[in-house]
Amino acid sequence: MTTVPARQQVAGPSWQRERPLTPSLFGVTASSSSGVMPSFRVGSLRFWDSGTRWARLQPRRDAYDWTVLDRLVAGARKADLPATLVFGGTPAWAAPAGPKAPYGDGSRSAPPDDLAVWERFVSTLAARYQGRIDAYEVWVHANDQRYFSGSTETLVEMTRLAGRAIRAVDPRAAVVCPSIARLWTDEGRAVLRRFAELRGYDHCDVAGLNLHQQHAADPPETMIGLLQQIDGALHDAGVHPRLWNTGVTYEYVRDERLDEQRAADYAVRFYLVAIHGSHFSLERTYFYNWGGGGLPITLQAVGSPPTRAALAVEELQRWLTRTSTQSCGQGLAIDLPANVWQCEFTADDGRLLTIRWTHEGTATTSLPPHAEEVRGLDGTSRPVRAGDTLVISGTPVLIVQQPRSW
Image (cartoon, rainbow, N blue to C red; front, side, top):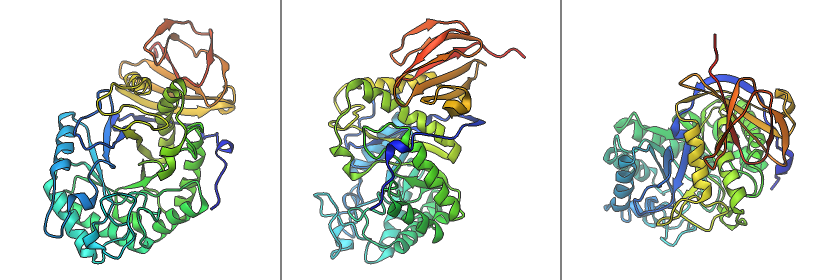
């Protein structure tokens, strides 16, 4: 398995293009079956590791159990959050000879022996939740044998059938193509390319990608280099789908936990990288996860208060409420030190907002024209003047400028 060294990929393109920043970009994977929602601000939800695998929803050929999913959907609607349901975990009765998936419910990684069974399940589910579930991700970690042991050709056919079933009963719901994992490897990108060559993306509205650092301790900005490679692979296949970042690897949970400061910095920069990645049609990103603890970065465990990382993510969203993205760039290309990243926004009241941070170390920069305030993720602020210098670190800061006068 060939991998790309993460720290050689800390670079990204600079771009300018005005586009509204939608709250749904700030997603989390809700890995809890409780129905409790995050108590800090998020923009969208993705249900996985939440008691909603296919095997749990249809335990027998002629029986469904909607208890958990009903609870989750009701919670999302009460919180006014768009919800994405992830498919995975074939019931044992539908693929009795298939390999077992890595769960204790007997679910299989194999596709069902009869794909008509799959289409009926998707149709039944989509009809039940018509207008209440906003998007369906056709399969999780679709090129990881532990989750899907079928062929890419079968995966394309399952995507076609699922797209047809969903659109027939709920045409407003988005169909998300199976999430492709291990994209740091040549083999992972080859599956992405093969799925595209087989016209799999013709059957969905969005491409699902497991976009993440190789290791939790790597700077989030390494994802930009990976996204460039993914964009190249899709371009070579002649497709240009919208992209959603739908998760991490199976091995992620074994990575070492980050200290509190770096966890907060990385959580915020995970979303800033997603904004930077909108240059490649990346529209939404789901942090893994919400609801569980013991991960490299924990946002909030069920029954516990939000962590410092979660509160920093909430503050970032507060900064960017009702804004449009104007540009993003890095280093010398935008007349800043090589380790500095920057994204610029316009607020609906006309103020210019600039967020700066580094992927490593610190750097001294000059404040932009008309700067009047600098804010921190801890909620503090201080007045500044244009021409003052500002030391930038791995903790993003917001520079507020006066509105343009035309």
